[in-house]
Length: 300
Picture 1 (cartoon, rainbow, N blue to C red):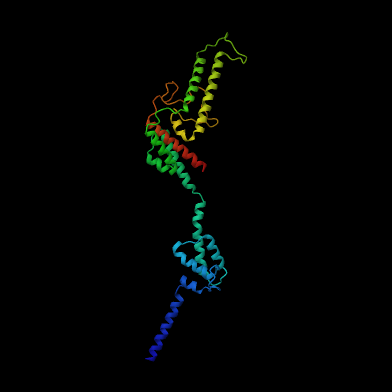
Picture 2 (picture 1 turned 30 degrees about the horizontal axis):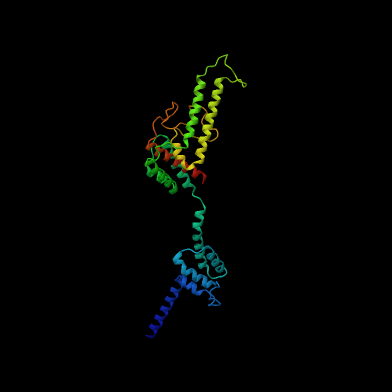
């Protein structure tokens, strides 16, 4: 019996030793092995034991540490020779903590390229005479851009755009005046007995010069109201019978054929004799929203 008891006790001891060798120390055991604070009552002193214990208490709640606290904890732990496993866990925790910051700092270029291609595709569909569904437009625009378009669309559907914008009144008057000078120039005969001024210009030349000067003044005024009323660009542009490009080298020519006209105008040079319908207004508003979105994306 005594021999059995000794053999049993020996087996139990060996089993406990094997278990002790193979057992992975948990974080609590690691914390208890750290040296105790020299002054337990001093809460302001940061020791390896208190630092690791604080990390252990908060790790299961937050899964990450504030960068400055983690840096200080690593600095203290690095001075201790026997805690390599703890250092590995803390280093991994620091790496995880820094990943969101890095992802926010690097812009997602692929998303911008994809969105630009989508906006350009929708704009090409509108320029081809087709329509774009509200759902497609909403998915392509940002929340702020969609909010501005939706508010403007409600304004259109309410029928408040039936009257011509007041800003275009002066532009129409300048166009009529320039058309008058151009028409008079075409009807003025020129022969060898025609009088010429000091610059060797005939009456027809002088009328054409006045027409071109008035067309130029009209274009300058149109460019001015488009720049000064940026929030109403969609409204003003949708009343014009053609897109207007005021960039240097792309301005309309100073002649009656190239000058933008108002939709529904009785002029023979107008490219859209039909009155501006609500459908046209909404489609033009969609086009303006897409153009503004592309410009904002390129400048960002």
